[in-house]
Amino acid sequence: MNKMKDYLRLYLVMGSPNCQERDPVEVLQEAIDGGITLFQYREKGEHALTGEEKIRLGKALMNRCQEANIPFIVNDDVELALSLGADGVHIGQDDGTISDVRERMTGKLVGVSVHNVAEALEAVAQGVDYIGVGPMFFTNTKVDIQEVQGPRVIREIREAGILLPIVGIGGITLAKAPSVLEVGADGVAVISAITHAESPMKAARAFRFQHGMADSKRV
Image (cartoon, rainbow, N blue to C red):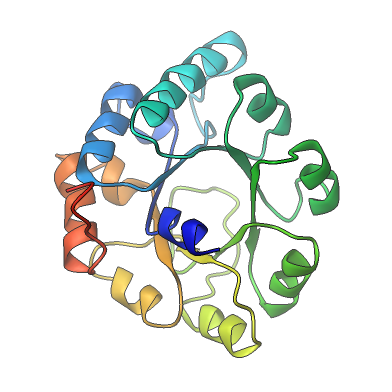
């Protein structure tokens, strides 16, 4: 559990549509150099890659993560995660049952998105490795955004006695990250705060330093 909490400190979620026409592999490398601790390949949205192109990009991104000893997680797609040999998968509430995913991803990391205490308790019962709680704030990244929960829901989950590693996600900026960490999150998951930055490396580094998440190994 402690290792999982370390992984969640600065969790980058990204696919080619998030990179503003920059090379996703270069963006990821800059973010790695800046200190991200976990990466999720989320190839969704307008102009997202499909088929062999999606697989090729996934392999290239996974190779960069492996070189840096950073876990590589695939969003939603268990088949893709298995074919790539990913370190795990992250699913939403509508992406199949947790038990089925856990069975297929034996020995791998499984994370799930939750929006309230009831969903968090179910995730614990199903044996996930961590939960992503959100959306913390409004975000344009997802077209099917759930109702904004705010950091308060993380506090409610912790007050319910849930000790599972938690990462907050959704509209988190450098300025808003403290309010997510202060209520019990082990880290923050970000997309545009890093991928849309002029320097993804500097953006990632700012998160690590400003919020006490830096370590000598990374930055």
